[in-house]
Image (cartoon, rainbow, N blue to C red; front, top):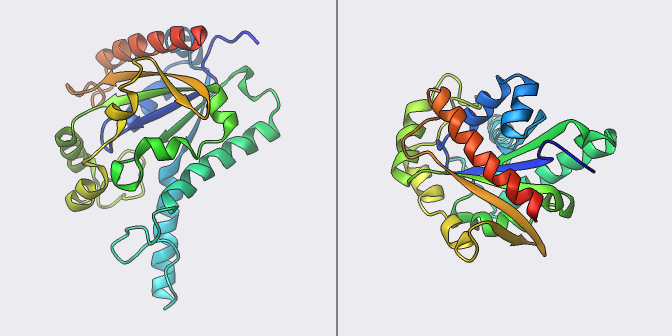
Length: 241
């Protein structure tokens, strides 16, 4: 089938790197311009943060009821490391339901799947193994590169304590960010090939968007230009795979 847009984009990075700002920027671009410049159709976002936040809220409710917490301890660390992988499986389940209900789903739609993973809980190497084969077969990956120090700075800057559940204003405390995300396995994972990852026997194209100079906060023309260049490279790799 000929398409003029990506079927699935996976957006990965450290917290605060600019993933949510990129999505917000793309959602504001008219559809025809977005398809022409970025090869992105109607956007359908599947993000694991709302799933994660629901677990936090449920555990707080259970604590108030005097019942055992299901997912997290009182500091909101997961009780069981495999719960990180459950979130990835949930992303796949949500995608499968969309394909079930709309057989022509990708005729117009680009699914954008967003998540962060640090080495402390298996990194991207482990997370990708829990993607469904249907996702892997259609996926392309964009990794937004920032240093840990930049992740820390932006995580502090964006946090709004009155809206901790907000996609654009949530944040982690410094200690938790350091434990979970200081170490990132992206560079090691991609060292063997500058263009493709081999996941579950499939060649999955990827590109890196460098955001060390923070073009995402302002969401101005600099971000548009960098996104256009990054996604154009990825589009060529996707067509050649």
